[in-house]
Length: 210
Image (cartoon, rainbow, N blue to C red; front, side, top):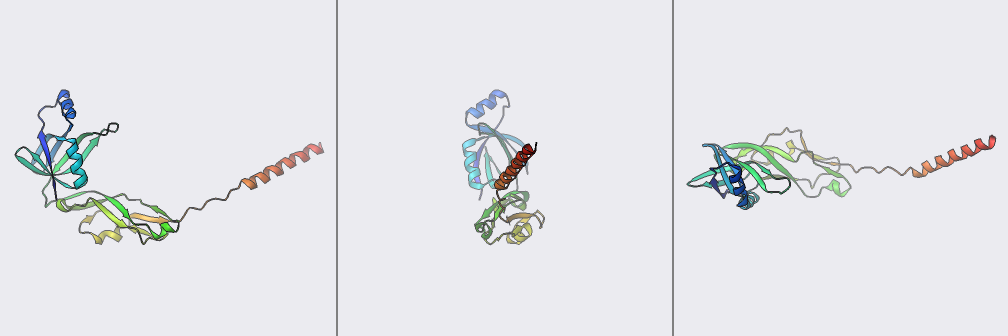
C-alpha cells in the first residue's frame, strides 16, 4: 500500500531560493519517468523521512503535486554527510503494474547451530538484485540461518524458489556461510626465553675461553 507525500512545484533555482527552501525545512527533488517530463519540486523533509520509514526504500509513494498525482518510487537521494539533512532526491514515476529491477537488502534471521559451537557467520552478499512488480516489490529478503552448521552455506539457488519475484543473481553466489572457529596460536614466549638464555650462556662460555 502506497503512502502519500505532498510536493510543491519549484519555480526558482537561484541560491537565495534554495536557501529559502532549506530554511523552511524542505529540500529540492525531481520527478521523471512514465508520463512525466523532468519535474522539479520541493518536499518537506520531516514528512519525507516519515514516509520512507513506513514504506521502505523501494516502496510505492503517491506524490501529490497540485491537481496531479504521481505514483513514484525513490530512485536516489543525497544526504549531507556532516549535518545529516536531505540534500536532494530523485523520484521515478512508474505504472503500478510494471516491473522494475533494483537492489534489495538481505536480513539474516536466527542464530545458527554453527555459531553456538563457536563458528563464525560470514555474509558475502548484503543485497540481491530483484525484479518484481512495483506494487509487490520487497523491502528486504529474510534468510533463516538457524539450521546452518559449521561448514554449511546458503546460496542464491537455495532460496530462489521461495519467492514470487525474480532474483537476478547467479545460483552459485553465496549469501551466508558459517566458518570454523579460528585457532588461537600458542604463546611461544617461553620458548623464546629459553633460546635467549641459551644464547646468553653461549656468550659467557666464549668469554671464559678467551
